Length: 535
Image 1 (tube, rainbow, N blue to C red):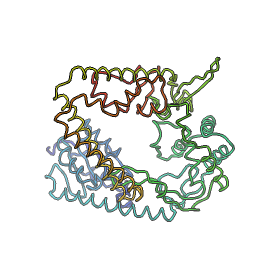
Image 2 (cartoon, one colour; image 1 turned 30 degrees about the vertical axis):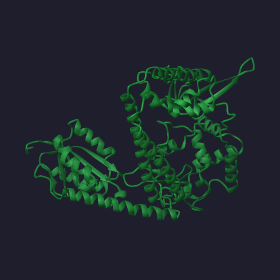
Image 3 (cartoon, helix red, strand yellow; image 1 turned 90 degrees about the vertical axis):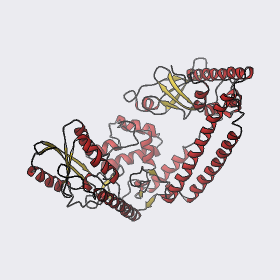
Image 4 (cartoon, one colour; image 1 turned 120 degrees about the vertical axis):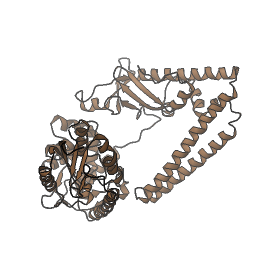
């Protein structure tokens, strides 16, 4: 590139206290002023746009401002990137090096780091650049450890360290580590507890709040200017649900106790749920919204109204297996009595039943239709297996075919063996990080050791007889025996559903997709045959 080229520059700015950035000297305003002044004096440079990531760590490049800048670079709108220093650009030395040494040169993008004296148009990259990137990442790691230690200390002291307060509270304007009551939201919380103690169900409470036009917690926070997003919600749902009410009734924060440490996240890792026994709970840290008597009544009612599914008598043999193909919610059972006194049953989308047609469609599926589809599927599968078995018995397959099947089984077993080994290693790492208790670790370890030994024995046995295995041996597989045992079944029961089915996805118009527990094995035996009750 020559000096006569006019560069359309992207000013990139980033700040994250999580990385230990000094808020005053590295502030967004100071970076902007510093870089705009530089750009105004630089020859052949015009600013196309400014891209800001405020509160995003430099250890990851999945930042909205950075990604928007990349899109403009790829569209040819930007051909120069200007940053205050390398740490503003990124603290992961591998990805930082990839962008500076490969991605930007390939796209013809000039890179300028003002404080570091780096300008790719004037000289090759400094040999110390990768080392600087390593120091940046190590600095971020050290800061991350210190922050985790500080967070743990603040939690134990009963200080609030979350980004958003529980619905019903807000951060104190005087001390951000203290919670004060949000009177409007607190009134809604008290009403929810009053209704529940008074005998109204959780779903009925949710419907009532929706009918009254009361904003749900996530919508209320956004309406108050908080940049809040509930990652547990389906899509952009913004209404009260059974789950929201249930979580509220069990939230000990409303008793005036600080409850924190429910999740743990390592640097660049995913958040992991922490067992309740390891939560950090400090009593009496803020004003209670719910009095102790109401709280204790609520908890007793929650326990009293909870009951496990009785698989012997429960009529809904598909409980836990049916899912709406559009919104992802579980399907709900609806029963009625016919004129002749017999009962009928259909399944409907849970969102539709709870929230109405504004949120999803019925996806109505009669029990008799579902049972007919599954029984037809099982009959067809069993017939194919029986036909193949007869063919094998009347005309033995060449030994090479048997060896192929055995090799597939050996590969499958070895794959399972490797998976168990990885799980065993993973649970040990979780134990070292304090994510699981010693008792949980020992229980998991015992289970994985037993499975590891079992798969090792299976692999050895298959390898020993691989020389003389015939395809007929496949009919000794447990899953085939279980299927053949269903040959004379005329009606489905819960035991059969649990044994045979993994999931049933329901679409409109009585269309369903069934995933069987033995689907992979079926695919290997009958690659050209499709099951699953589609249409």
